[in-house]
Image (cartoon, rainbow, N blue to C red; front, side, top):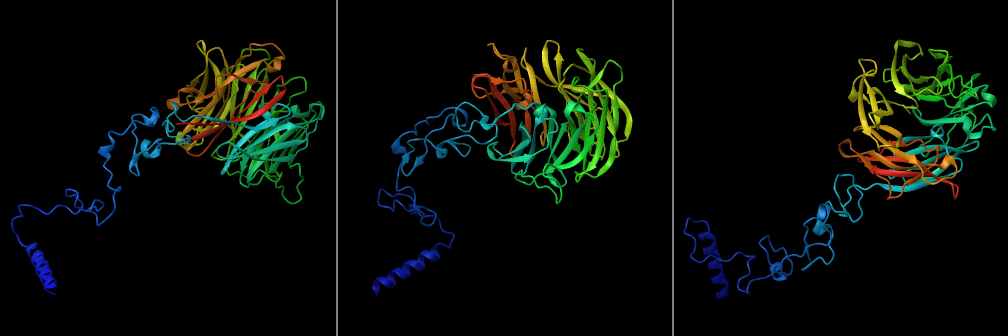
Length: 511
């Protein structure tokens, strides 16, 4: 009891004394977490009793040793203290939150410290039977990845679904109607479209002897499977069937996604170009809105129309681009005409000079570039002094502008693709030269994969030092935007021995 009363008095004095303005004691009481000559509670901290690292004195271990990796974000990193010892193998604890053992981020950093920033990844999507030219393959960005359609087998369109890493998930065969078995796949062209009812597969086929052309539309579900409307044929809703033949038709949807605009030339089995360009506008169910009519005619008797492209404008109208030139000539004209929602011409036609075979891409740069007439642009390849370049023609209905998008590898031909992304216009290409070995001329090509990199500077993203083996039908790159600043591209490689064609995907970072 005496001890209890004594502690009570001491406690009361201490509490009351703490409230007075007295001078501090000459010898202050040590902090509760301070080790006092080895007699204090070594594990007690000043935060209410939280335990520290078992009394480890990091200074007794010496200076932290450097980590194994010294490049990228790992430069200068030293081993972190974990459970009283320095990490035997450095992890993100030592390297920092930006570290990844295998790099996955598109952030402009060398996250795995191997000296390579944001490396591309390549994957084999599918083996191909007949090698498709640019008109027999198409791609489309969908919410959970990318769809691609390829015509590499008779009477079948293969719809390939990939995830956002461009890895294949599924392949669905869609039955189609090919009118000319003698020409097989050379009589077909295709395009994946984004409609008001979801993704859709458009395709066309030329009849025997190019005596007529037929276009059809197959609606697809989220996984790329055909979903024909009730009563519609499995091979697709018939959009048009006309007595002119063209195996390379073009198609686009209206701004609201409810109508399909298709265009084709009066070509023949002997001449790839045409004297006239025809077009029609239909509902998604095949109901005619505008009957087939002539949209454009060649300006001179000795010239033909080639390379037709169409695009839906944001104001509800349409745009038609065609190349006109004399067979065998080195230069020609690009002819551009605007049409309203009823396919009536609006304003004067615009023309631009271009070298032969410019491989044009008609693109809409979006609202950031201006209104519906300010945003359309043409991407094409050409020459600039002694170099091969990709150029962009803009302000097509104004004074016109021209800028260089990329200077490609000297002495090599760019086979390119484009995509308009949330960050602007992107481009990727195969930089192609003749293969050094002999053999079939169809396989006499090799190339490397390039794309616009940081600050728009071209970057070689080929997987390894070897050139890609190519076929003359490899003259395309399908390009789509992926989440988190990634881009996805599809290309085709081909070998003569063993005979093989492969659809390849590359996922790369677009800073």
